[in-house]
Image (cartoon, rainbow, N blue to C red; front, side, top):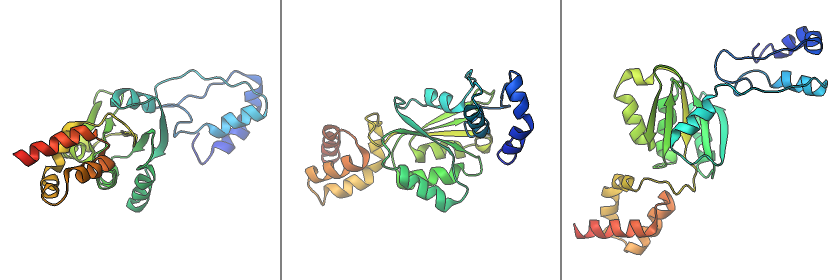
Length: 223
């Protein structure tokens, strides 16, 4: 059963559904999670056919558990779009999302997706999970730029199936050490603006604690 024949399959087995115990399984992942099955479940509900679920492996849940990011609230977006323009639109739409975001990403779109994240959400923490629950499982963690660089170190890294987890916009779990990435810009700003103004600007875009930003600026100014 797949997206294009689900209604046909339901019509073929509708009598079986009413007379037998039937099981919907998936060869990978979990049914209905970017997999067929929604229409089948809807049919059963409308026709008073009891439906239950026994949870199996789900890369969405595994990626959240391994990400190291806050997961008390999250939203799943399914597969990243195919075109770069639509990927950019998607990333812009989630840039102010205050829940952790989860995406499926094909290996052909992974670097484009990371480029868009780097350009639009900047220094926000992410996790890219490769080949979850398989022998070649690996998790890349960091900001979009550092994760992209790690992946590009070895062409083998780009092979496989990927799940991307993006930190929420309001997360307090930012890695303060990452402010070093802005050193050159901050040094220029220190000569032109007051420390108070710089603190406000940096905090607005990174959500890093203002006191920590101020201490870092003092260090730069005195060096």
